[in-house]
Picture 1 (tube, helix red, strand yellow):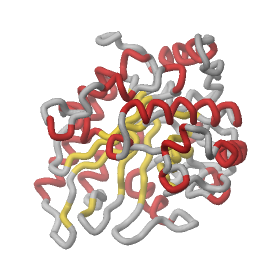
Picture 2 (picture 1 turned 180 degrees about the vertical axis):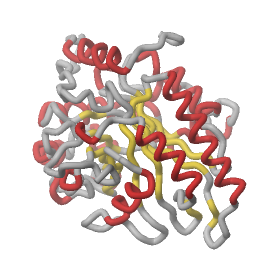
Picture 3 (picture 1 turned 90 degrees about the vertical axis):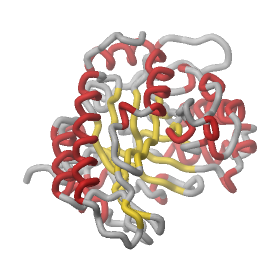
Length: 333
């Protein structure tokens, strides 16, 4: 279907039709997305993952709230648990709904044991987690950026098994693979996955396809070899496509910020936004508002923040947010 443009509303209809189709083999029946708001289907879900060098976000999500003030309105938060949480209430996403944002959660099986997870050794713990996930359309994955840790066939086995276990326990969870752009540029043979199809679990075992992408020196993602390869591979599957981590301009730790690179970052965001507006299959876009001992990806300058606010203001409305909050953080008073 390369080259065919669909409206975001048309994409929602296509996903719903595909979801109720039965598939051959051992795959479970597809569960339709039932979110009446059309979130991340009919509109662009815009969000952030927020942390700071040497500091994770706290229980009140102070860093995310600040990111929303600077970059918002934001309607989805990316969070990470280094191991499978015992329950959703004990996870890093536990209070997302309380501040009125959707959750995109990532975890790894106990001890990082992807082979054991694929063999069913942790099914009861996974079911317990899934049953406790709020039925608000939480997005989830396990072992994001798998290319560093396993082979393609191992990842496929893991994802197919986890998809079945998770969806049987809670069919409202939206589950899919998250790939690492670093491995997806065929012009870089030292870190090229070789055969993308070896990493694909199949459209009957995924609700979306996602990519984590970074540019140390700011340049449009949508003009990069890694993004182009991933998009051309994933687009024909007909599923929503997500950018679940996006970072532009890594400022080295301890170094002053470069105004020229800040401007280049703002320009790159706007060029990517224009491309995404013309290709509405991309229906989620999350900025990495964080850093570590190596450097800082945070947008702390007004030019970059202004560019991202333009993206956020064009995205899904606050009315699509779950939970008890009356407005998305960072939105209008």
